[in-house]
Image (cartoon, rainbow, N blue to C red):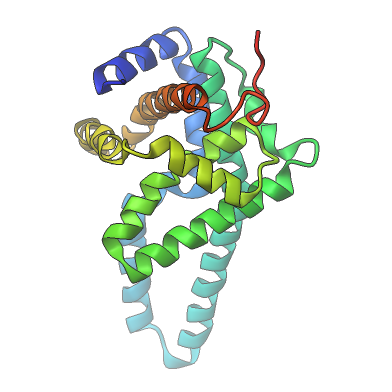
Length: 240
């Protein structure tokens, strides 16, 4: 059985001497997926709203279309680039747990026919989570935690179909969802501290968070292998 203290202690050991490579891995994903822009999004939305109110009517339609196009472009980047880089980053962090530090893992899902399936699985996962959240908020949050390990599973085997990836993540997180919620909650203090520096400090907390979550996956993967929920072959793991 894992504890938050154990996972965080392991994460600190993993980051020791390799913090900056982990920082790059976390930063790349945050930038591409828009993870680092949430605090500025509200301000940007307010500026757009103010601009629309003061804009001549003949330009308002074009302005609205421009916003829609920009939002669509951002969504496309998140789906076709961000989701794939996320899998590569998870592979970087799980490999780092075994003291293999290779930023080349960021491009892992772009290679050897992996890209299409990774995009498909990540997109289906995102749509399913959105629909669950849209209809039932609390069950939607639960599903989010149930499927939170999908990128890590794809980082092990990028060829798994979406049904199996979602099922395996659900099995791995069964009985652990509340503990994972509390684990995520335990980083709030760090993120609030990082936000005090105009939000920039958040980027320096991400490697610690990402490394801890990778340690969680490694633990839950080990337990799943012991239970027989999956196999070394299915996850493309070596016996060495």
